[in-house]
Length: 224
Ligand code: C5P
Image (cartoon, rainbow, N blue to C red):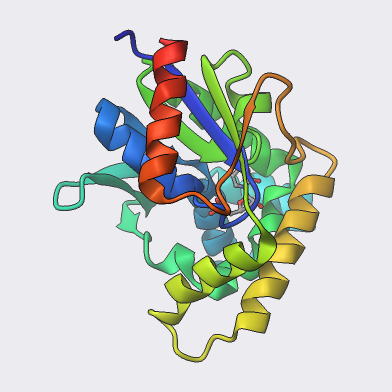
């Protein structure tokens, strides 16, 4: 089977990364979580009190940011490193989720992240998930998937994930955060979240993980 680029875009908490990881394992591809890059940049901005409303401050800060995906040999999944520190857990916290869409809407931030994402696709054999991967990062990808799911189902999935780590979180908070991020992501000026014309829609509200994988593997076969 020839190696291809698979893009998975869609709303927050649709299960994009779960599907991407399954595909990467099955196909022996590299999985890249593009959202982790925006989260790591947000973490850096917060930790270093960067005034991200100022383009000069953003450009200066980006020059000091080095992002790497490092393979965790135990899990077989790449983890986000920010300036040589593993920040995989820190970037999943609610404080980051609350600000990341604001930071990801900044032109200089997107140019910084997208340039690196494009380079990662040079060797093919890659599954990348995000919001603009099929439209902007890899417009010529062989297989593009646009994921969606019922909002209440998405909220429940994300709540369970976050509650396991933080018992103080409420379902209302999670819902508000998802809705706000989706709104900012879909309405920003640069690279808004939207379905690429040639993307296949995958609504997984009622699909089991196995059925979903089986369906998508069929699309992969058709595309290779
Ligand atoms: O995928 P995840 O939910 O971790 O992404 C976090 C945020 O990063 C999104 O809500 C969005 O604002 C931003 N993002 C983006 N473009 C991407 C991936 C993520 O703007 N390709």
